[in-house]
Length: 385
Image (cartoon, rainbow, N blue to C red):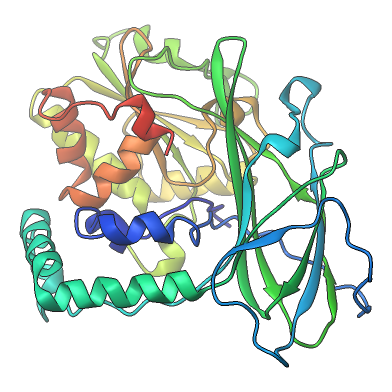
């Protein structure tokens, strides 16, 4: 199945201007969608002595007398990472936040027909209205009332949280560090269910995910994936040296899976990419396509490509997510897109691609606007948020 982490919902991306006030508070409640399933241990009574790595509550209502409270224990695990990608986990500011459901804004009935510009205009007007201010204030109170804890780790990455009310929680922490001239994000994610049926909950080890922070203007990492027969290697140079065809000025690097959107009943994402490249070529844009399929079953993916007649560009395969090219680009979900120039530099990062596809009308517009210089690359400091 398609792997999804990440990130942000369509609503938050479309209403960024409207939600400035809420986001400052909601950031404590946000988490990636990569789930780490907790293992519930046998119920135990709370220890009378507190550990030096005990967490403390930093936000939310204090527990009321008689309220059911649970002890949460866990450990951050770096054993799967190479030594150079292991850090002092005590430096990673990590929080445990109870997730809350916020009411939906009173959008117009024909909201889905609004253009991105019309949506932003409506949202700004609503934000400044008396009803909008009351709506934002009510949402802020819901967030402020939700319990949140900071986590304190010992040298082994262990932590313990006392007096946790039952509910669904998001655990999230991140620190960025420079390694050999490349900046990496070290992140921990987990979604945790605290049941009132237990006095104590012990989690499975939570891994530290390491992702390179790649931004526009940087040299793109090396690409080396298998061709359809699994014997030859395919890379960026193949697009520049293919005989009989002009070298493209730009390359759209497309990480994808045959499951993208299919399970949601939407159009096949790869079909959208194929049509976009066809349209750009028809309009005189020299954009090459390198599609990298992350499916574990390569023969089945090849049958899918042939059945759908995806003839544009070159196709590469990784035979799953455990692959050096996937790691170099920090791909955490599909679809994932990058725009590179003929010299192998990043023109549009995945961070920008993800955001722009949510607010522009088509993939063609996203690529054309960047190629034509109608929008500027996202600053590096924004790409790190």
